[in-house]
Image 1 (cartoon, one colour):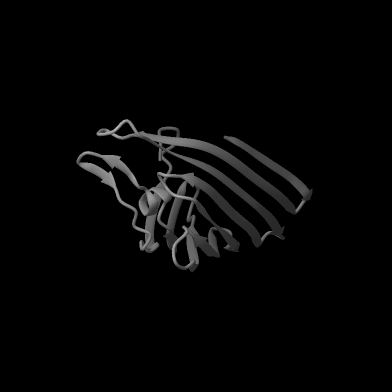
Image 2 (cartoon, one colour):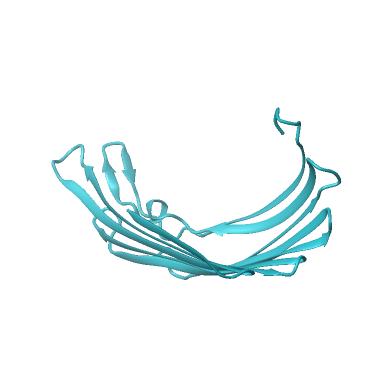
Length: 191
């Protein structure tokens, strides 16, 4: 695989970041009953660009675009073209010296070669309160989702008693998370 990261300050209030990655893999499986060898090739390309804008002392705005594409060929997974795109944004708002509110959302369009694309808006919010140095009280909420992996939806390999069977009817997993927490620094000893 090859990956890259580029980051630059466009101005004293604006930071641009770009990331890209390409990986290539060849998967092979030897049948236990026959001498046949099953192979597949996967090329995975991922890219993300984001900007972080400081709007005075009260707001830190982050906006970004995240994309991925997988090109798959061979008997193990079949010929597939899958991928997705997401746009996201969040605002970290300094409500008071010790109180920070973060609001954000991510809109995903993902495809695993299924009969229809998976779309979801995933909001998130968090509140952090620092009543004194070393102490944080926080609460957050977020939603997310995940499309089935290539392995889960399309593998067709195996032998003997263990055989992977394709299931292209798998639906995306959707989740909601809630968190309430407290942390206290204990000097140099720990947290």
